[in-house]
Length: 239
Image 1 (cartoon, rainbow, N blue to C red):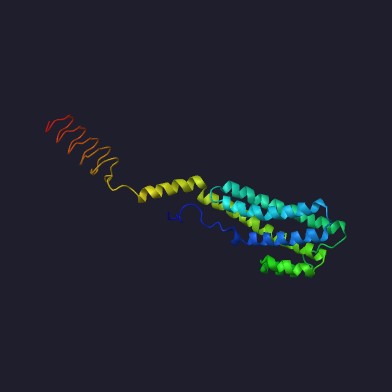
Image 2: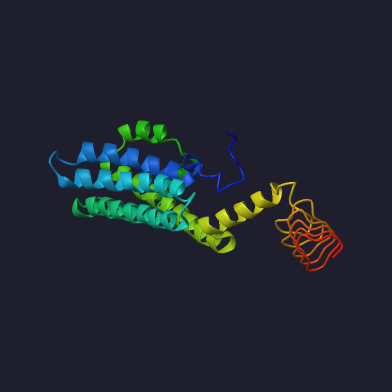
């Protein structure tokens, strides 16, 4: 069966979203960081990895669910944002309790990191480069990525809300698709300007009627049943 490209949204390729690509980088960095610098048995390891995973998976799930439910897409996208903020706090806590520095916004290292993260979306690059970096540097890289991803997700949420207001949801799309189908697949036997008429022109509610109104099996008759050229006649001719 041929796929209807015009029915429902067909643009839900979450892997093409910059926010998703950045969320994947965050997950890979967090996976390495948690296992490398946190002690085995520390519950924070699982919590950070799960928060990073949620920040990525919910973005994908919400994008796919958005095909039929804008409400669910909006909900899951916001869950994604909340998970990343949870992860952000974990990185900030790590730096603070260990007396490590969280780079200020105008710190040259932060400026350089922001520029690098804006132009690199391949998680493989981060997996390679963090092997040579300290825990402080990796934590600040992750913090930068999270802030950038958060900006993208907020923009995505606003787009979802605006698109819903302009185009509606699944009910509106189903209704419009049905009306368009009916328009393009109207049976040829239906009369012109008539309803339920067979071979009738300008007739309403007539069966096999020509130029008749409210007639059943009548020719040139008004309100006649099985009559020819008659008015209000039943089984009569010219009556």
